[in-house]
Image (cartoon, rainbow, N blue to C red):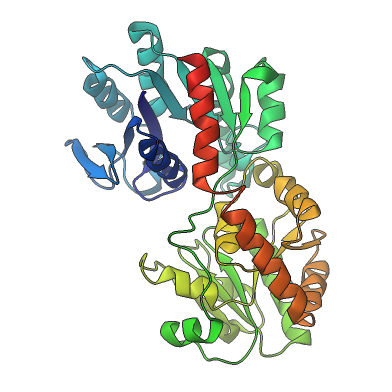
Length: 386
């Protein structure tokens, strides 16, 4: 099949990775995949390149920074113009903001190409828009996000969803249950894999002794405060504990805790070094508040924790809680700092349990949550509609 992926994200950000990993696995299955994404900086020029057999088309966007997130009409029109004269068997739109929705509708209505919508985040009313701290911006974006998120769901021949809550929302919007595929994120086991902890700490410049708790990537404000308070409680019981925040994080976590010297925030980490940072950790955290924004997603950071074979302490929120109830890969805490710290100490005091949970997490990463397995499910879906 000749498959078109439409992604609103900038290269290297967010859902870009979900789409790229699926695309690479589909290419291995001898399909042709074109991945259309937003360029990092270009405002006028369109660029094409090959990545592991995937044709990546980077389209220009007039906005900058975080505003390059699916809203620019110029970006959408450049995509439509690029599509003219090209034929695809199926078009998969990752989310439904304008820069992916308009090209998808062009493919469906003018080219007769069946369309699939992927729903990986609850952006609109009740979802992540409610996490914005600026009330004016929140009020302006709420109806716009909700319109694009909800209005066009019946245009898709099939729908892929990242979690059960979004599956329920799709059904409530009239999407037939038999047309929905539950497709969580997969694990990048080529980039992330277990190595000896002390060797990893040496390579990253961390001291060999002491407890290291890991957290990866961005975080909502309320979740950041929950994590900071839980870490303060953990430090009261385990004074040498450190919190390693890997990759980009929008908050200074050190400013939120009683002992800022115990916080290590790496900022951007090169791809060839990031595996060592994960392996430097003893336990990883997912300290999420019980919000629709958190229940309506699947955090890819959990897949990275699984791939390196580290146990996770997570709050009992969303599909993550269901997985940990089914599989012994970590412990669940209530949405309470004391509970998070208590469950962490349970693992600290049970090294054999930590080892066994980490081993099971790695097993799941290379089987049920491999990108190859998930791409196989997607291939079946495409075959049904083409």
